[in-house]
Image (tube, rainbow, N blue to C red; front, top):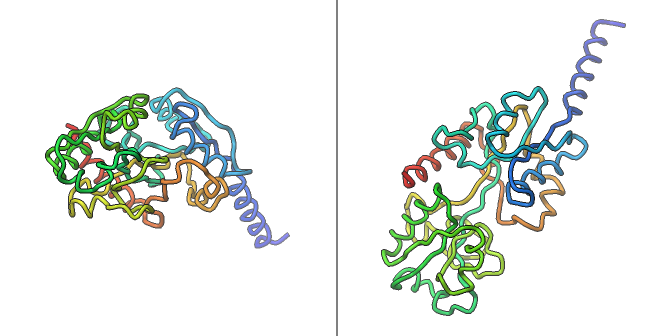
Length: 270
């Protein structure tokens, strides 16, 4: 056997081995929650390349897996974890790039005719907007609405009360990632509803384009763009407001944009 043939066979064997390598997917949050569902999409998209599903208690334990596992592991990673060098902040070598983002949607209860008028939001008095009780995001959200109309007050809610507040009449509007069946009056980003964007309402405002997002994290070189070509992505029935985030940009461009956004939001919360 010639040296050239041997070299060709070795290259083919290496390429096949690299392609066939199993990749583990890690879950570190409440089963059935958004993080869990996003990680499931990645797992399903891997198909035959999926190794094991690794389950740990939280993002701190997940971080340890990346730092110590000899096996390839990937997962979705809440973008906000990368702000401030805190306990869940990953070294950038474990951040593969930006993944998905959903702009925040401002919705109202369908029977509230007054709230359906954009002028009520822009010029009304004693306007109440419900936001999820996030120490990180809520200050930036409040800043946008205060600058939009000084008569707007934002109210932070825990998960269960947040789901019922709008229908009960406690608030006029609610800021959410998923509008569900509630009508949308504005969106802090491009949208499929023909709704006013944050940029329409407050051109140039630092928080006019804002939404919840995920990165992809891993200890292996993983081309996660295959997710967006998979049946798992195309056939999802939930989380449909999430779209690929900066797909096609370099990792540097992705992280520079994501971290600039985090710095702006983080500074508002301090």
